[in-house]
Image: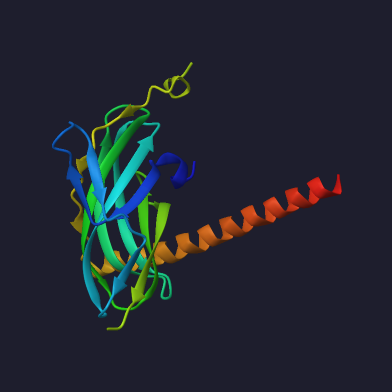
Length: 139
Length: 63
């Protein structure tokens, strides 16, 4: 079977500024500043962004993933991070928020947030990506 | 009937997942290649899906 078929599925990616927990209702969260773009008065622009991610997997187990922030023009990542998730049961759905700090956008233009998962041999498959645009607004 | 068919997915409570930087240049170089390969695969897959949709639409029009 292919790597894609043996690794968790990424059901949702939301890029936002922050995630806050509700003080009124247990288990309820607010995604603040949901965005698919960033307006930068000055480049390079350093920014910390938060991802809301929903994973599902038919098979329980521990899986290793990576998030790459990729500039479309060069097809080269500008940020590399790794993580692991554990599905305790078959058909479990896991929801997470992740802070991807130190993103340095040197140029305006299109970028992608990509999520990869690896199989037991370490082979990786791109499971989902979310477009993100950096706009230059000169003062 | 499977759990999936029953809609009995167990959805976890939202929690923070802490990530770790990948700073090893060799690992970054390897991921650069993975990224290029997967972007190419995605583009080919999208082109195939568009081609199949156009073929299906053409067949439907011809009937």
